[in-house]
Image (cartoon, rainbow, N blue to C red; front, top):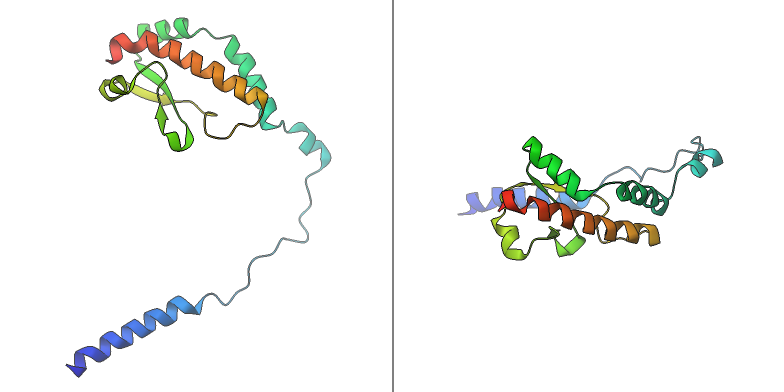
Length: 144
């Protein structure tokens, strides 16, 4: 009995020692020779809300019904959906039962999470949700 007990005790103590040992190095520090980004680089990078203003402008030039008809003509059957943080997957234009029955590929839309960067982002989200709803409505015939 003692012979079996000693090896398991030894292994357990070594494992506990290894877990508590930690690292012998300190945390990495910032490189003192690294340069801060120059003002011109920072100024040329648009803020997220400004990027969504540009995406909103591009989206306003698109027609969901036309794009859906073109996709159907190509034989490309898919639905537009998005992940909304903890709320999970949303497919505009489909109820819960239809979401379960649909058999088409799902293309997810970026920028629809649970963080809103500003008023332009909010407008983009609303417009994109309406676009996806109209697009998905056209695709329902082949996806259900």
